[in-house]
Length: 247
Image (cartoon, rainbow, N blue to C red; front, side, top):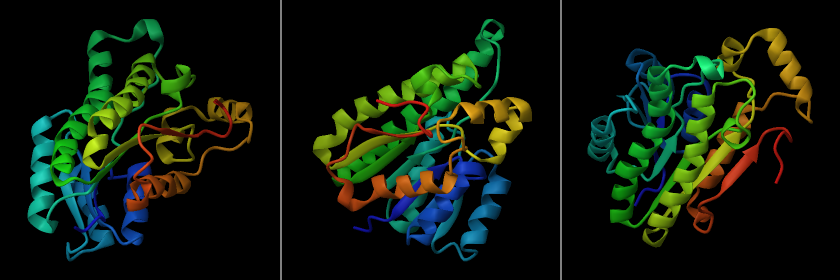
């Protein structure tokens, strides 16, 4: 079994793109999933235009059928995924009392429901084969309630941490590990786009290390948890937040 075949969701840009590039450089065949098919196709082509080691998949994480189709496509191309990285997410800044029911449902669907559906679909396939690695990208906001994000995002990411434990317990006896990584504020375009410059500067000064996180290091952590040697690491969470949250 080739243990280096991965699906990375939300891979059209930002952290997902960095994870996909890092995994590809480490010898993985990578399927890049994203709702923005045009952009994710361009990223996949920049890794391998031939499609031998990189492919793009249109993926709306709110739809279970999209994950089933992605799973089938990877099986057809490479024989099946062995690693799932649930990175797709959407952070929104919103005043607590102004969040509408529709906005809450949408953010939770992308950040929490998407992780649930992915773990359910890929976790079942992994369990049937007796091997798999699932890495969920959570957030510091899900641990502290958030400071620069909305309550819907923080609540959803807190749910991701709980789902990580639930699926880890369910799949452990089948050779499948499930872990999470909870980054703090990262030095990524999406962070600079969603948080005003002065507010981001103030937030940075509250970080004990006085720096935004390095997205490349988060990608390194994904590789660590995705390793075949990581069989005894499951149900855990790597906190990478500059010292903002310690336990």
